[in-house]
Image (cartoon, rainbow, N blue to C red; front, side, top):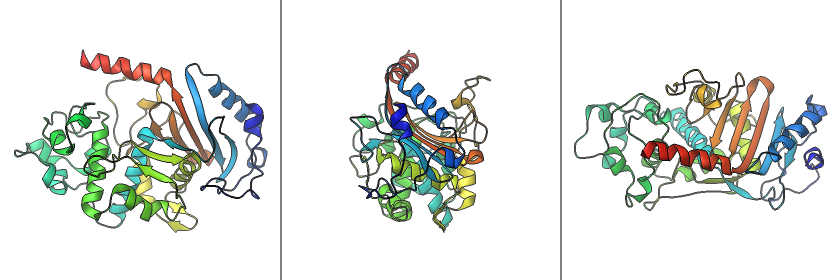
Length: 332
């Protein structure tokens, strides 16, 4: 694996295949990074029990300085991002805000009137886009929303709103954001993202799961290549600027990556999930760093202070075991 990680990148002459090999390549030493440290880090990931690593990429100063796609995986493969998808949804919301077509203070009931129950409670009436972005809609999360029939939103908003403003991680918040994008633009979330972000960034290999009614799922289900994930990390690192063009405003990226809300169930425990939640992203234990974070081991980690982006795709059975235990605890 050490040899794979360090055989990095004299790929400038290599023809790009399916949008891979497009980002500039360099090497660790040229970007003032220890190649041995990168190799040791990669080896430690590969040695994790009950964990498969599918793709790794490290970028410094906008250049790929290390990557690995252990067989049978290839750089051209798309990978399900799981909840890393949420970060792309937040970028789309930022584009709407930049266009003055949406504000984070807009009321959800006014944006999605057809999805509201016949009787709207005061807290549901007060719910805004900000609450959806910060996972604080106050509706008890449930994994059964996909079993509610074709319409996922009306059953969701028909549930009691009991903790508005309190963090409670829920992919339905992100799905509601996807529906808002479609309601405002007349395009699916993926169509809008393609036009506003993926097109200018030359991300041509992408698909996103849809609900029976044709809405992209928003909170999960986006599939991209690792290099496209790296591009998203670079876009955030560069505060919305892509090759001299401002695709998302600096103001939105700043809002999207700053702590917006705390968890109140972990005390002072030093965990990456306990440094604060942003807009569909997490703060990291590493000062100043943020990440998109998806189930089973999907990450886009961004450290502005180090001018660094790290992409990881994998499959962790330990993560599955932990989530199963938590679900059993909730059901009990």
